[in-house]
Each structure stands twice: as structure tokens, then as C-alpha cells.
Length: 135
Image (tube, rainbow, N blue to C red):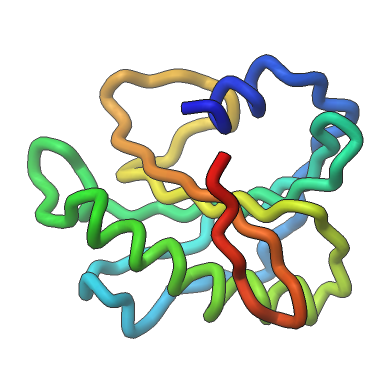
């Protein structure tokens, strides 16, 4: 919850979206669910450069999905390693913090929707390794 407060209440100096050049579908997810990359956002929070990788994962829907948070956390770690790290390298991006989020449906960044199930975690990427950042 602290990350949510920090991202939505903290001073965001700039926010822009990187164009996802093609649909990125994650394969071999630990939970077996289907996940696609929706967008990558770059912003500054409290003087740090944050990259936000936003994925759509319909199977986490609280009413109809079968993937609970524990399995989704493993998927988020997998996404960081298998999608985020190569994406950062390919586009020569710099970040202090990476936020990987999965939502059961598309929604605009910063908008609340009680019908949306969403999980997110933060990582620091060092030497091409995702290090979970408990915020």
C-alpha cells in the first residue's frame, strides 16, 4: 500500500509513456496464465527515475480468475527477469526503481477502479538481476 500512496500522492515531476513497439506476451509464466505488456511509463518520484511496466493479466480477476496473489507474485518476478530486464537493455533505459504491475483489465494510470484487480511490486535492477524492493 505504501507504494500506491507514494506513486499517487508523491510529487511526479514528469510522466511519459514509451511506445511498446509490439505486443509483448510473456511466456512460461509460473502460474500458467497469459500476460501481455500494455505500456511502459517513465517518471520521476522523489528525485528517482522510475520505470513502470504495466501488464494485463485477466486470470487475476477476483471473481472469475484462478490466480491468487501468491502465484501472481511469482509471475511478477518472472516478468521482471524475462521481460523488464531485456527491455531495459534493448532501449538503453536508466532507472532507480522498476514497478511491475499486473491488472485483470486495462485502466489508465492513476485512475481508481474498484472493479479492477491489480497487483504490483517494486524492484531494483542491478547487473541484470531483479532485486525485490519491499516498500
